[in-house]
Amino acid sequence: MNPIVNGWYADPEARYYNGRYYIYVTKSFSAYSDQMNLDAFSSADLAHWDKHENILDMSGYPYVRQAVWAPTVIDRNGKYYLIFASNDIQSNDEYGGLEIAVSDAPTGPFRNLLGRPLVDRFVNRAQPIDAHLFKDDDGTVYLYWGGWRHCNAAILNESMTGFVPLPNGDWCKAVTPNGYVEGPCMLKRKGVYYFMWSEGNWTDGTYHVSCSASQSPLDIRAEGKTILQSSQIAEGPGHHGYLNIPGTDDWRIVYHRRIIGDREPGHRVLCMDRLQFSGHEMLPVTMTE
Image (cartoon, rainbow, N blue to C red; front, top):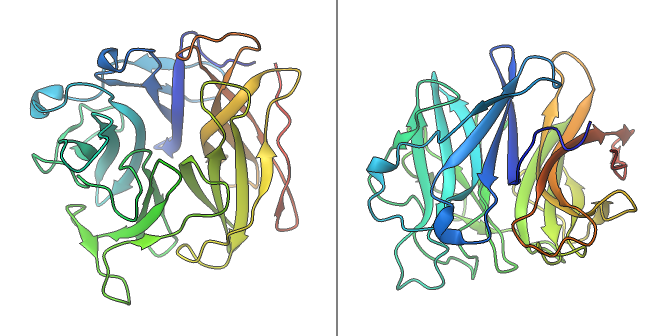
């Protein structure tokens, strides 16, 4: 049943750890100054959700004043790493960007790993927001991020404290597909990489999700197709994550959407629907109530 939890939440990232499903979310307030921590939800059955409030230890972030949003989490070497955006920086003269935190448990508390942002500036014109962590089958961890219609990709080092040089010597690569606005997401299924992103305006019904398929996590095709968009059920769906039911080819897309006609920017709700494929083609998602 959608929405899957009560309250205003956005930008979900979904994971499966130790027999439970986890969804990490932005607290969706209109005032960025009210967005000063993150929540998570966990479930054993995708139906009954436990709430985990304020999973960040913000005492390690004295420089963060607003816009704690868009979490992404990955497990590595027995630890859980969370990257989120801070301060909604508008130029390299402001302090903030992408922060990285670490915890011994998937629900935190997540503590500042570096004592500073992981990415603190615009690179390839991408605002340092909307991170997404993707772990490939060989254990390599990729980071995708970017707002303001530009997206970058990089490979994190083993300690998650920095980046591995790419073959050309650069530490990151521009991977912006046509129509990209924000909210990158990478899924791998049966050897195919599906790169997804959000387009349109997050405050209205133009927001939607597109996808392109490729054979490499760093070679993103420019052309994509829409796989999630407004309908008579709801409007403005986007900035999503996904879940794979362990041991199956059953996939779910976890996303936020808006109630039709509600113009309050912060009013976004957390939803989940089936993510289906035909061969190697990702099919358009049908939103449900």
